[in-house]
Amino acid sequence: MRCYLHAFLLCVVLTLCSLLYVFSQLASTLEDRDEGGVKEQGTAGRSGPDTGHFLRKKPGLTGREEDLDRCKSLSVSYWNPYWRLPADVCGVNCLLETTLRERSGSAISEHRDEVSHLAMVACGPRLEETLTMLKSAVLFSKKPLHFYVFAEDNLHDSFRSALNSWPRRVLNKFKFTIYPITFPKDNANEWKKLFKPCASQRLFLPLILKEVDSLLYVDTDILFLRPVEDIWALLSQFNSSQLAAMAPEHEEPRTGWYNRFARHPYYGKTGINSGVMLMNMTRLRQTFLKNDMTAFELRWEEILMPLLQKYKLNITWGDQDLLNIIFHHNPESLYVFPCQWNYRPDHCIYGSNCQEAEQEGVFILHGNRGVYHDDKQPAFRAVYEAIQKYQFGENMEGSLLQPLEASLEATRHTYCGRASHLFTKCLKQSIMSVHRDITQSR
Ligand SMILES: *[C@@H]1O[C@H](CO)[C@@H](O)[C@H](O)[C@H]1NC(C)=O
Ligand SMILES: *[C@@H]1O[C@H](CO)[C@@H](O)[C@H](O)[C@H]1NC(C)=O
Ligand SMILES: *[C@@H]1O[C@H](CO)[C@@H](O)[C@H](O)[C@H]1NC(C)=O
Image (tube, rainbow, N blue to C red; front, side, top):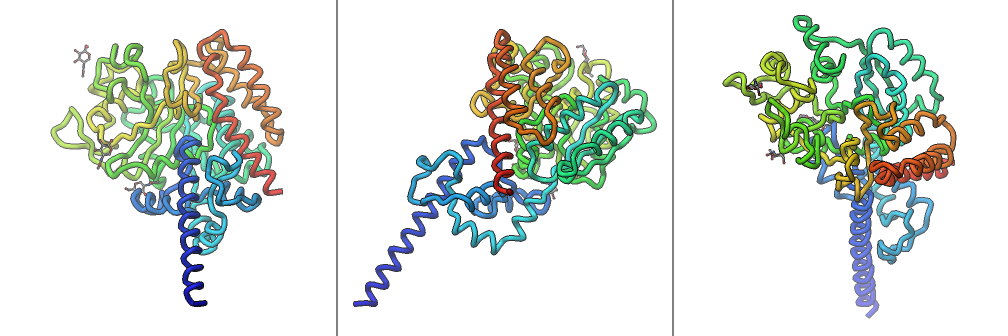
């Protein structure tokens, strides 16, 4: 009799355990979706995307430090369905987490330390803008960063001393390397002239940074409103033929530039924008690319010059046009991410047309055409100035978010100003998440 009772109890316990597991799974998937997708890290950098996917499904191996910590300090009843949990509590089972964490501690710490590599090219009067962009990168990121700063020689000292003047606590989060602008010897002048001075440097990054596996290239006029590691995580979603990721140039074909004016091939319906460009450079260096110049396929290093020669009279936006031509012929090599990762005035100037941003907010703001520095789009300028004025160490809610919300309020006479709640939506979450970490580490 006692034996039956034991068996029965065992059954009950097992059932409860499996229920608990299902709930925790459900809750964590739902939470991820709420936060707008890619929060997790795969095993990028060490093994292929497929293994990454497999690992991501297991709780405790997701590398989400924040969740682990949150669970630790709050007691949650697991029998509460996910929708009854307080907003700031993850529905992940802590017991399970803890045991898994102990067993796979090394795996987690490796994820925690995965570095996001960020490159930019700064020429002319772009020093302050670049520093503001870098500030936005370190403010919200929790994982380590490596900056590859390509700059004209006369800016090197200013960059070095500005970055080194940041507080020690901030400096611990990143490394940086400063490089001169270099072009292939034979055609240096032709490349320098292309588009804005120095912009075409980015095409050569896979050849210059030979030892770097993957890189996020950004224009200096972008601002991160979300941790850098979140866009970095998209690398692990590449399928086997994808080697770069960018956002569409336009959402709305009626106002698109490429589909109305381009005198060269371009990617997809409206072309792609290269202001935020994620690259697996290992693949970029290895892959042979189809093209309309030779009957055979060419490597990255071989394709650029013939392309420039053929199209130089027909291109308007310089190296971005060349990238459009390349991915027109190799569409399977491009991963297209949604507009909220590269949100420009085009997305709101005549009314909001970036659907993903409508839902989840803007992740990366791109103030192209100088809108951070003139009065054409005051909402963009307000975000830039709020981050620029913020001093490390101040309370981000009081000294960044609140002043920003106040100045955005004053831009509501513009279309972009009316969409500006999208600018702060994700920013608010990023700031709260950093705050949570700070309070917990005390
Ligand atoms: C880039 O691609 C190479 C070759 O396919 C792969 O080994 C590497 O893990 C990839 N890097 C990332 C960060 O996914
Ligand atoms: C450049 O544009 C002209 C005019 O539209 C077109 O006739 C020509 O074929 C284009 N050149 C190339 C290489 O596509
Ligand atoms: C990778 O995804 C792209 C875009 O969806 C697709 O065109 C391509 O065929 C895929 N490649 C493989 C190997 O599945």
